[in-house]
Image 1 (cartoon, rainbow, N blue to C red):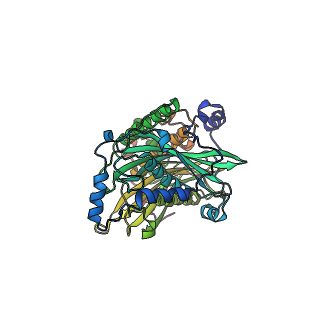
Image 2 (tube, one colour):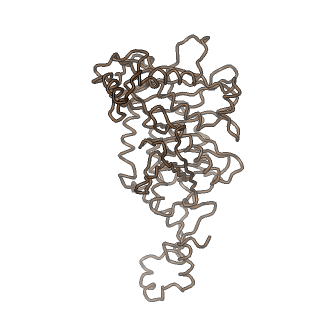
Length: 501
């Protein structure tokens, strides 16, 4: 049964003004009768124009690097200003009108393959930035001095179910520009009864590198905003950059949990301790719950040449697809539900390190937070270092799933699992905010309220007379034999070692 607080929230959000306050991207002004180019054609044209011709007839790589370095603009001031409309582009994924394409995007559980579509959105974001860049030092048909790569993707909110029998349109443009980076908004629309309907939108942070070496940042054109809509989009983009910086500073990898969060973890810990045996190691699972350590699922992939991008690195969109698929499978296995989980939000997709051809890529998924019928899963991708035999983190993301019925509570047992729980809880609240279920700015406020988005069994008061010893009991405890019998001790040790179920 859902809690009264959450049932009340679920009923009231339908009437809140922020429920539909999603950011709208610019609308293409092209003639509606002009047929859309297929996405594969748009991508191929961009690759031919900016990437595939980088050798430009030069036989030696050293000469090619020297040639590309000469095309690199010395500073952002040397580049002409550009507008959001200069980068605006749209493309068609003909899922509904082409049977061959439909097969590539159809999931065995019905509907479209989300991971495959996210891979296309990642590629599309790069196309947007290439269209935005205008470098006077290079010709229209010449090679590009810029190499555009993805730094992160966040706040992918899925508003509607994505079908596998209707055409999809991608629309995107830059929304904010720094010196060598840009935020790109990519929207996805699907045809329904002759009308394009918005189904999801995401933000990508793209960075420009020196194509000659791939190591130095490359300046891109400054952005000029004109209309009121553009000013709002730019302001939101600037705010997103600041929010990402703040989130990084407040990360549990750098700062300890807040007092409220620490109290929450301690309450969860005490509510799962078997007080009868007087040992912190003796833990008892509440009803309808699972230990977090049992919510894991892993996979591995050998990175082959066919997985490379245009710069001979493993394509980041493919890694995202693998992560999303693993998160979905893990969530389905964890819940044990007959119905499939539905992804509602993807956040915090970070690209920390390039993956090389020949790398052994490990994927780790773990359910880190649950609330009623919602599941928060964290997925990471790590590369095995052949020399040290250690795993190096390359990618990480958070995914929110929804199921038609209540799911088991996930309970941390160790400190590092508790930190994963709190991080997942933070992202869960942010996802509600981005979906319009919480007002903007409410996520941070909700984080300090223990009685919301927390397993209800943690709110039950402990039986102090039977299980908890206060200061008045200390003398009595010292006077009586408080040592446990050997059989009880062996039982606890067996539980610690995982020998008993």
